[in-house]
Length: 107
Length: 122
Image 1 (cartoon, each protein chain N blue to C red):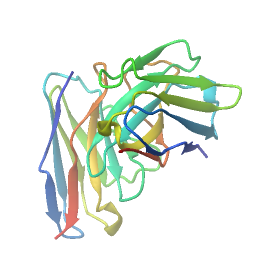
Image 2 (tube, rainbow over the protein chains, first blue to last red; image 1 turned 180 degrees about the horizontal axis):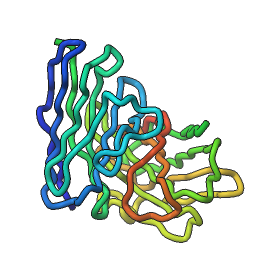
Image 3 (spheres, rainbow over the protein chains, first blue to last red; image 1 turned 60 degrees about the vertical axis):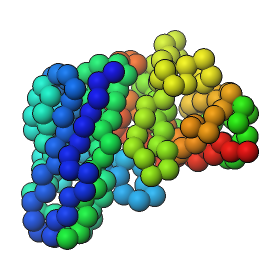
């Protein structure tokens, strides 16, 4: 199965600053990559699919890029509600697999 | 509004069984594949099992194959996970998650339930 590796494990960012999260696949997943946000006690929420397409209702400050094995989620100006754990997931190959997550915390 | 509500979790001894349910509303249930995804305490996400919209195709992670059975009742808008021969490593919050198509092909999960906690311990 494809292994997804996220970095960094924890990202400390001040409100209003840009956050850049990385996700690497052990083999090409083309652009079949999704990003999720999870807050404590809540289920994951789909942010991005197809590497760069925002899900319904997701603010424009969230953007995704990349293809093949290297992907990036950028939050252009962090708001208080954006502090959470973010997961990437590949769905190019079966079974779908997730990265271990990046926690975005307040600096 | 799409809603997914899981139930059936609890504390069970190793080797025991449990059946989880996920009741769906706000969308045509039979038109979409569904999956179970679990999250061990403080850990990441692991896909467990999936089923096509019509229920004819199922798939399982190697870690649960032969022990877990996924099914659905489209007349009741309900997804199930029968879990047998439970092990300590099955302890997790189990989320049901909706796929974007009727097919069980790998895809993103566009809606998730809150989850139900399964604890396996003696």
